[in-house]
Length: 291
Image 1 (cartoon, rainbow, N blue to C red):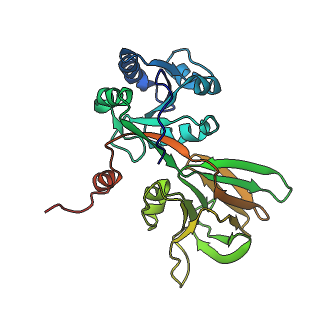
Image 2: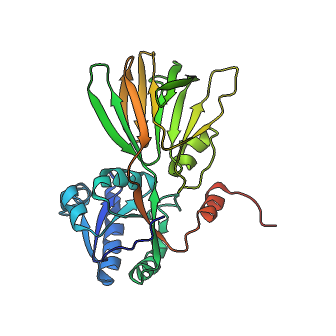
Image 3: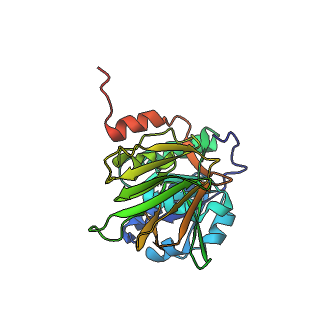
């Protein structure tokens, strides 16, 4: 967790859920709430164009903003975190639907959130990021960052993938099946959870390696690996698809190697002071009975 506070709270940069022009009225309502509290609102050019407004280039908006706001769902927030990563700005998610794991400020709670924000009653979490690079056999490189997960999967449903996994250059396992998930603790409640992987407290510093529908007579149990190790993945299959945070897709061929390590800095997520991760888990996953 980061104990530091924002230097100032004067300008917020907004990004809206893509391909959702119906977000315009909600954005206008949110903008008024922020401006009524004395916070200037900027909007990225793509989001602005979608709703018939004029905005700033994304990079310019990030530089001018004290913090960034995702208006949509967890997917919108994931995209914003990765795109704005180099600017090191805290990101808060206003959820336009149901309560999310990441975008956890509801529309009804925005007024209260802003009041608490201006009083300094908030926290900034430092979430582990993965830094990855796909190195092709011709030497070309495709670098990327991920907040949730990296998934290696089959290109077509009829094929099984074979994935060789090494840690710090030493082979330790070959996974055969539908795919392999490399997850952060933040992403542990996403695809990793659906595939039978463990839930990890989001401020933990570790990778989770979870096989997807392993075709093996031996149990391919999920593996938790500290972030000071480097994971290398490759496949002798003709093609394997690498999916970054469920959004960016890369095709890997035989001879290509995917390197993953912990990034040198985390993503900053801005939350309500009273937000309790275990309460969110209980609500989202319908865990337990108090009686």
